[in-house]
Amino acid sequence: MPAHLALRRGELPLPIFLPDATVGVVRATDAGDLQAAGVQALVMNVFHLMQRPGSSTIQALGGLHAMANWNGPIITDSGGFQAYSLIRQNAKFGRLSDQGITFQPEGAERKYQLTPEKSVQLQLAYGADVVICLDDCTHVDDSNAEQRLSVERTIRWARRCRAEFDRQLAQRRRDPGRPQLFAVVQGGGSTELRRAGAGGLPGFGFDCFGVGGWPPYAQGHLLHEILHYTRELIPPQFPMHALGVGHPTSIVACARMGYDLFDSALPTRDARSGRLYRFADATPQLRGDWWRYLYLEDKKHTKQTEPIDPGCDCYTCRHYAIGYLHHLQQIGDTLCYRLATIHNLRFMVRLIQQLRLELHP
Figure 1 (tube, rainbow, N blue to C red):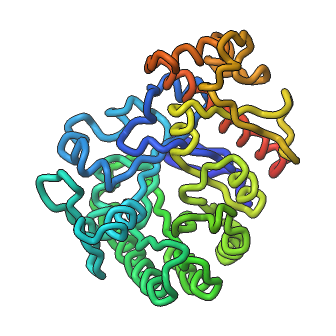
Figure 2 (figure 1 turned 180 degrees about the vertical axis):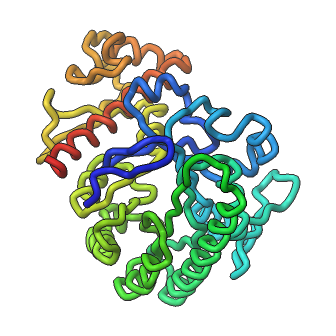
């Protein structure tokens, strides 16, 4: 299991959790908040960014890093999952073909096209440090025929992404450093198809691999067998990205299987809804009942003078009591979103730090 991922904007210790800054922002925070919480890298999404603010605006603002005032690495997701969410749920919004994805979200004035080549071109133009290949995402309960089509299409798209990536880099020889290219392994809940999905991908020179498909759960339980099996398909010297995995318990389970990168909007979305994370003990021990939720809306917090987590060193816990955050939520003040998000992100960073100690003693 690798201990670091070397990128052109810095070396990331592994494992690592990356907050989703889907449309160029981790909602309710700025770059200073993220850095103070210990966040080292972000994930953004080309599917959304090409619509808002749009490619011409991103380039006018100097690329993603300048636009968001973020100096650390940025991974850009290709949009495969978002296409799945949009099109597979309602076919009127677009279609998938071997060529790529055509979509027109509700309310959009025009259609968009996203091919493997276009996805790579956009990600590189935006200044991504890691480019993810476009993939054909499926639901874990989709039929075997749909899963097989997804696997075959995802492999073909990965090869096209590889070719376009190399072509673009050959034209950008003056660019400092080299971004990395991640491929995605599909295959649903079938070990046979996961094996086919991994296939010869490592031989195409990809830098890292992600486990694709949605959701990573069945009946509320993590797909341990499939996730473990998929990790074993990829040689251990390659980092592995558990795409979309962000529940604290799931991160611990996947990290112990050998997964290295995690990204999700769950911790920040939970924060904005008033669902905060805290460790059960001042010194985190990732065994048994090691963490729990705190719900800001509970009336029992009205006059509580303690911080969210007495063992936490985040800005919020150092300066504010639970009772004040409860008050902010009750009056609907957006400061609550910022303070809660800072805390949940710091919880995730502290969790990852504890996992590093366990996995790389």
